[in-house]
Image (cartoon, rainbow, N blue to C red):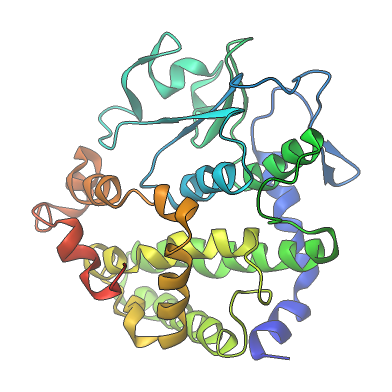
Length: 308
């Protein structure tokens, strides 16, 4: 057992509870949870081709995971993907009016719920849910209802408890921790938070000495949660000043990112131009971080990752 597995085992229940906490905090038009298990309510939302849309921002790691899941599960004929503009002004918006709306919040009854990625029902013209955390595993249930096993088995029954625990770990110790370290106001806090992040990255790197993917030889939902954050490490180094995110310092994590990027469905949903555009040239990020990196390109940003 690796040190990472030991750590997750010790706090497994806490990590698994993240999925339920996120569901309770998210917007749902109708319940999608029964006895702590997600299901697809096909009576309310029938399985009809091209009825549903994923609204997503390619620069967002969470949205990238969900968009990739649609392709890996073979759901492209059932769920359309609609990209938001990479530049945010007053709020996130579409490139042109979509479903009668320009700003994302116009599709929600309450502006506070206007969170992407979100799933939209074109027939009833309503947002089904904005549950960023659980959307990918919810789409697995959609695929299960179809009864077609065209795509990858991202959430196998015999590994669901392990995946739920790993997902909670990635959320707390990577997804959230990057921003805790990157946005710390005091230098002493930044040093402390970055040290915790570095320790986690090293745990993951050591773990991947023994495994191809996080849970063995097969790609799962957990890998789709870790990959987008690791891919953006060059941006976190420059924009957030997080030098512990130099991915080339972790040979197994670096190999892991390169290998996952080779999967065609992953690569198709890894919009490098849009990621760079949002992080370095969106007005809200220029205001927050300044313009020193506004001339960065895909080549200059991701060169060291040596993506093929």
